[in-house]
Amino acid sequence: PLPTHLQAPPGSLSLLSILPCPPCFTLLSLSTAAVLGCPEPAYPKKWDVCSGSSQVTELLLGPFQIAIRACFLGFVFGCGVLLSFSHSSWNHFGWYMCSLSLFHFSEYLVTAVNNPKSLSLDSFLLNHSLEYTVAALSSWIEFTLENIFWPELKQVTWLSAMGLLMVVFGECLRKAAMFTAGSNFNHVVQNEKSETHTLVTSGVYAWFRHPSYVGWFYWSIGTQVMLCNPICGIGYALTVWRFFRDRTEEEEISLIHFFGEEYLEYKKRVPTGLPFIKGVKVEL
Image (cartoon, rainbow, N blue to C red; front, side, top):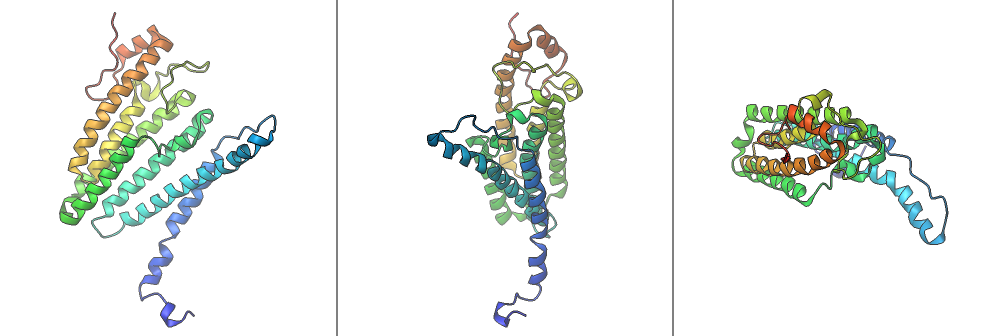
């Protein structure tokens, strides 16, 4: 037995023994899946002294960097699960942590399954943009301040549950769009048509022209409804609407260039799915 001065206080040992379990199991499963989803590295055909060491370093660190990100997301997910079951005003923030970590990890995993040629560290979308990072930090700060000064504002369970439903709907719709599009899906808008690029109009693409954007739109707003963040809720709605308006128009210019009349006919039949966004205007 440990000396008296090194023993944990009564009641704390059970918490310390339980706390690491969900994150550890999650870390193991997520990091394993992430590494298995990593594409096989292309070894250099010729070796030269100058670039050889940097190439080896890149090959060795690639899977390690993937595992680190997956482990981090697994840790966040595990902490979110524990926080969700806590009897505190932070339990809904636990829902948010689970939703956020699952979203980013699943973006990488689905890309690894669907389109491994485009797979990279950026597929986690953790470094999406400076604006995305600022928006996330703003929501955390708002939740913390309001939870300190107006904790009752964060305990509107029916509103948080509605936000959770929006998050689940958005996540499922986006992943369904990624699976339906298959290798045609890419996180970056393509300006050149590849040989395997085809126009997908079946499945969820028969409902919306841009189902992945629709899913992300409602997912992002749902996270703020879940957190009962009134300021960021409004801010997110306006910001993501403007982002997807511009993104939709940019993408549709390329799609019209790729598929011509075929896409124009599809555009007439199927809406974008985003509120008050009709896509690029075509002058006839």
